[in-house]
Image 1 (cartoon, rainbow, N blue to C red):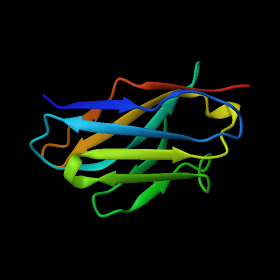
Image 2: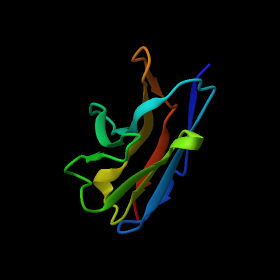
Image 3: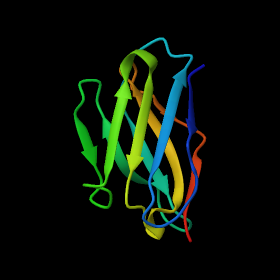
Length: 117
């Protein structure tokens, strides 16, 4: 059974930084792409960033220039760093991965990020 487990969320002051990690387990096939989405209260889930196994990245305009996504293919792990955090970054952040074979989508349980003084 495939599981994606996030870590690294919490309370951060405005202007601060965070690094989220997502580790996949029970995986017998390649995951491509992997990435992060977020959902703020009362809003739809939105893409934050994705990365392919080859290292191609895509970022939402809201985080472009102040975030970095990376992955360790051998460990099925994806990371997200965001600098210059704003209250508008407050959301539950979800790890995402798509199976290369079959195309199934997998989601983590989510980790809360709160940006507040």
